[in-house]
Length: 156
Image 1 (spheres, rainbow, N blue to C red):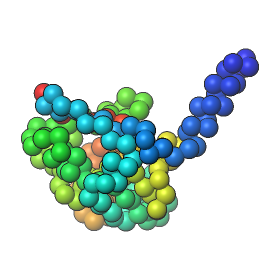
Image 2 (tube, one colour; image 1 turned 120 degrees about the vertical axis):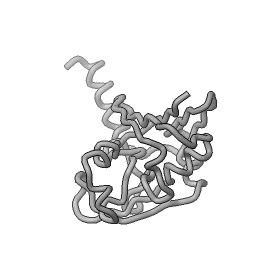
Image 3 (tube, rainbow, N blue to C red; image 1 turned 135 degrees about the vertical axis):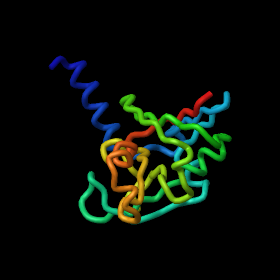
Image 4 (cartoon, rainbow, N blue to C red; image 1 turned 90 degrees about the horizontal axis):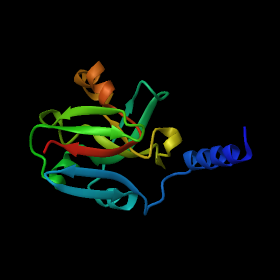
């Protein structure tokens, strides 16, 4: 590995271990020609939703804290259709608005009281309360539980 490559790799790994800084834009929501940018502080100012559940990707029960996707969609004026939730690596899933409730899914920014870092599926993770209802224990719900979420786009 060249010295330049080593420096770039070290810098990348350092950012993966760090939690997001409050002033960094973590999430961009675009719908109806409007764009909303949220840093950690802006997300934390919205009504908080929290639940404890097990997941396919964690050990035991985990407490997730975040904002309901329904809250973000309401702020963006999205009332029907579907939205595309996209991760940093461009993995994207479609979520029908009719299937979004005040309780699920949430856009989690904390796990067990710790801010999510990119290394730990953060800074944002779409999470359902899997243990609360068998309807969340499906391949569809699991596939929509994307981590490293950075943008949500509504149909134009």
